[in-house]
Length: 297
Image (cartoon, rainbow, N blue to C red):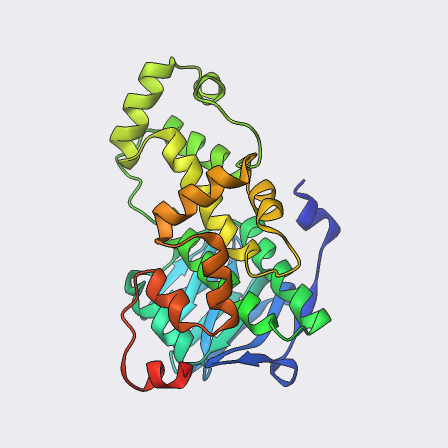
């Protein structure tokens, strides 16, 4: 049984405990909230972005169409969108976060295909992000809002990656990709990856590149770099600590890959966190102008 589920890390932080900063606010989070049989219906939704993870058995309405949830599924709903979800016949559970502000609006502009549609995403993965944010709700550091912002950014990157069209991808390639996502801290090699799905290294490389448009090792590096975005927001960690927590044994190699991916070394990226969100968003490919840009200064 999954340790997170077995230990039942249930927590709730509501809007009166919100974490705010810049033009970003986390109004509340909840992990593994169990509900009695019945449906939740909000005609006018909520005044914020609602990100909710539904477990199998729930019925959720997306764009006016009810969907029976058969696997862990994430829904991302804009402010003011009608909500209808639950299970009339049995106890059900869900985990959630409510986020608002101009920075969140800007983030979602980059991921329009994720809005108001069922998204496959693991229960454990969502709880991991909620755990990060719950820690900030408890400790209330000056930069807690920035850590939460980066956690949401990281979550959206993962969801966008998971929700790609997998219909024509061989099952063993999907299995391998999931293995890499869960074991990125381990010293994985081509030989170990090939052994995991019982194929030769040449066949692995060819089939993986055909499926995902990237080599297995490059994909592993992408996964590790994506995780580094979160850890860099913790100013108590050195660059070497961040590298180690993301599976890189050599901090100089990590810095070189990070600069190649994001156009700046991790130290400069970290500095941009302290000076506001503008540099961060521009480094990730966003175009920022007008009142939102003025707000950062």
